[in-house]
Length: 445
Image (cartoon, rainbow, N blue to C red; front, side, top):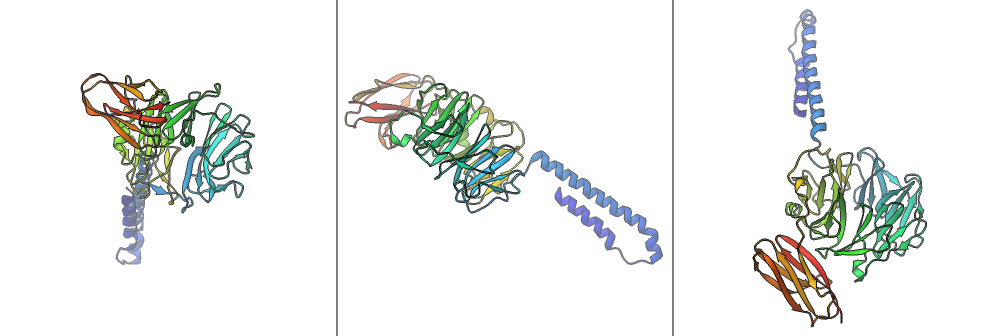
């Protein structure tokens, strides 16, 4: 359409300047005709340009384009807050854009640590988590900042979330909360089977609960209760991003794809999304314009919107962060700055309709648990197929395979002795009916 516009414009100019020389009197007599010829061509060009603008606004930008953000720095987070797009650039600082990425303005100057990792609005304050400097608070939308680290036992903050009037901070050594606008922080007491489970990589406030993603586990708690539960995930990888879709929750792992739950207690792989993605390292999940999911994995050909890949002109290093801002998708890269794609159209997709939690009941149980050495695994097969039961150490090292054979429908039991293994926690992984299930067991002597 744009080419038609330029062709029409050139045609009008050609008619006006390339005619052969004629006598002055004849030139004056034919001037009105030439004027209307040029006017018609210009009118056609203007109409073509109008159609081009309407087409672009209706169908969106069909390729990734770089914004005018800083480059050469890793984008540590992207967030749509208060009608502006915010970004944290590792080693540079905190920036925001209120014009779709055309201009970026630094916020925080030298006060905020130059490695901002998260941004959260709560009440009248804006909070920024940083990689080495803890948490900063601003009462004036980022104009001025102050350090609020009292009681914060670790200054490496990965994520922030707000539930009711409580602010939560996930750090490299645990979860902290504040009920006084960040004036003081206290360590949240989480179930602690192993120290490496205590790094909190992602947070989500959902249905009066707070979910904290760690390695191989999600911790679930609420403001009203001091008790937190540990949900063993069907993976040992980090849970590094979370996305609520109504009552459904999607989480992305650092190497095992996307998992889905409708109650935050039972989890299974989302086979539809994982089959569509080229990489199982899920770096970001973001809303679409109609509350469907946009999924990103690291590497090339890795951004998926509904059942369509958004890879036209995408940087080869892939996207580490995503944010939906005013129906436009923004992606943060490792060194190429912030890019934009959209506006995204609202259109139906078979992929988005299949985001349902697979049937998880009955799956399997292990008893007695804990046990000194003898364990019984009971599981039910609904469809004829291959069944795998494998045991892993707490570090993800495969120890042995208990079952590797085809089963018909029915209930089965398998017994094993772990007398040669030292006391501690281990993991039993069941692959059944196209799903992977995960259970923690404890050897106690």
